[in-house]
Length: 121
Length: 277
Ligand SMILES: C[S@@+](CC[C@H](N)C(=O)[O-])C[C@H]1O[C@@H](n2cnc3c(N)ncnc32)[C@H](O)[C@@H]1O
Image 1 (cartoon, rainbow over the protein chains, first blue to last red):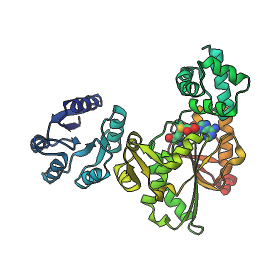
Image 2 (cartoon, rainbow over the protein chains, first blue to last red):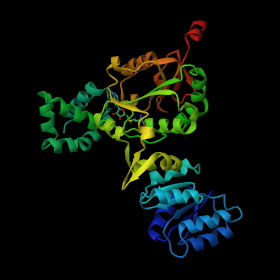
Image 3 (cartoon, helix red, strand yellow):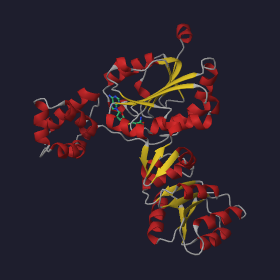
Image 4 (spheres, rainbow over the protein chains, first blue to last red):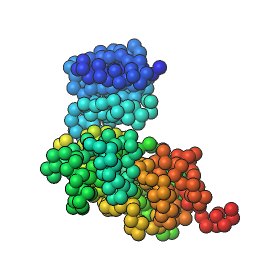
């Protein structure tokens, strides 16, 4: 069973994402900011991460840069999450090592499509 | 609304664009036609139906037809046709057309443009050697509404997320507030035209790549056969015909050879090969 980490400071988004992932037979875990996500990954590297941009303590980009420097940190497929059509932001995230991006709000269809695109389902 | 009335409306649409609505799709009629009713001030489907019977103007007939047709599409739909083109077929054409440096492509039933844009981006991205080739690229659809939208190349953030890899978004789209527009390098590759597949004399010819995906699904078998015959005429020798993934059984012509196990991809056999067999 593939393992996904949902990183977002909004409980609602975490719930929605987890629900979709669990319906697709993923094991899921969650973190509400970049710092605790990083600590989680140091213990157990997930196969996929869905990552928010704006979070307290350590934001998405900060997390991503540190993640990719961890041992085995290039393993997880990272789908980056934004709320705006900000091309600058998306491109910054891709440069920092994200594999795909998804815009909020997303539904099952779009999320599933993204997972397919990155070869997770 | 009686079934007989709904069937009558469906008949009009079938005459107009070939779309055959089966009885189980009849429930779509009421919801899909609601905007047309509102626009023209009809109180209900009965009054629209009455006007159509006494010969309402063509624009209303067209709008009814457009409202009932499915335009559903997404970028790089089903992935494998694009992989096949990239890995096997386009390299092959490059060899074959090396002298003329000329390729002709036709997407029929292109809807809002995701399909032709996917192919155009693929060509631009993966085949730099084609930059100085002449590429005639036609994208057609019976609905002028979707063809206009396709030509503008403006997509919502929902549309842009369906099937399109992020590298392509970053490279080939400009963000404009809440929407995204395809950049001119890609838009200018394609010529968008309103065209009804019922008018056989408007078909393009000498085509290397012909995509007509998820269009004939909605047509009656006889009409499908005629279209397949015309597509065969449209194709160059060794040209490729790409139908939808559920449309593989629509051709049983011996001179359209299935490629890629039953996935709706066919290669037009060369005359020599046909003679030999
Ligand atoms: C479901 S969409 C398919 C879009 C795209 N080819 C794809 O596979 O994603 C079908 C399209 O066929 C068009 N269509 C239906 N009847 C047609 C006809 N008689 N001539 C040309 N296009 C037609 C519709 O307007 C619609 O946009």
